[in-house]
Length: 443
Image (tube, rainbow, N blue to C red; front, side):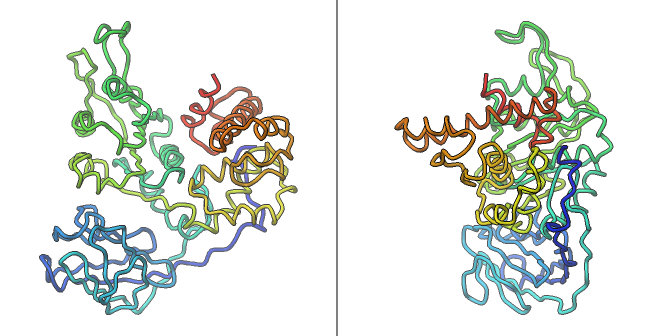
């Protein structure tokens, strides 16, 4: 059974109350933008950004304000103001804050600007969708459910999308889901990871090359733009893209034309662009490590995936989904074991949680939830015993244990799915590219 077919049992399906949405009026009472007012009423579906960046809903011209200075969120109990690690800080009624609830009437200092926040005392109910997943994306928490209508709208459009979020939050899985829900679902879904290709080969990888274009180019080769024709090109970790190539990428996206290395013919392509990054691109633009014009072209639509620590209600659902999809017996998934998973912070987010569930199934209940090498009380005890007595430093021993687990895990999943990489990766809850990366380590 794949995770696509799995339906959680009622005991773990927690009802999520409707979101109570409140409007807010932000008035600039001091600073370069004095007199401006911003009406905000869409807390139920997204985080509202405040800063210099044009992508911010509350966009200020104050140069002492960070590009992405702070954010407003509505979580059903009120309106939260969150400082986004700004350069000069955020001050509410004279006190520096990181995260605070607003009652209305507060004055907020950012840079050389003073803003007044007036929260609408009346509330209106926004009924969150009942779904606990959007294609491959899984989550029944309010933080995820309020995003599903946004995902559906983005899938129905054809604009470029920028997906932001920490490592392991599921950016590639979301990109695949958006593709599968779009009108391009019958076309190719092509992945380009900016961190895995040498800068000297990036040009050829994206745009292709003609025979003899450089040493080793024995045959002509299509680039990823041509391969993604009539489909979606997912550019992962766009923030790591070499600056020298950003202008060429911008031109290709704007004109939908590419020219192979060593060629003189322009080829028209029809490609939807979805990019993802773990970096704060606003800061990268400010530091001149990322082109402003490319950023604006990619961020026509912008989605931020929340980290797992802000989705605590999803851990039980994710554990149960992964457990069943990986072939585990649901009767052995006890409330005590689920609680053990819920006790951890999961800095590696959904990816780390998935790996922990798979490790638990492979090594047994006596194995630790987190990846350490101190336990030998499992079916793999022979290997763990050798690691314990090998005398290696803990980091090196841990790396060997994880590598061995990944080898057995990938081999098992490929056997279960008859050697079909796509189905095996889907059952694992990870992207095909990431599955292939793990598999390649074994050869």
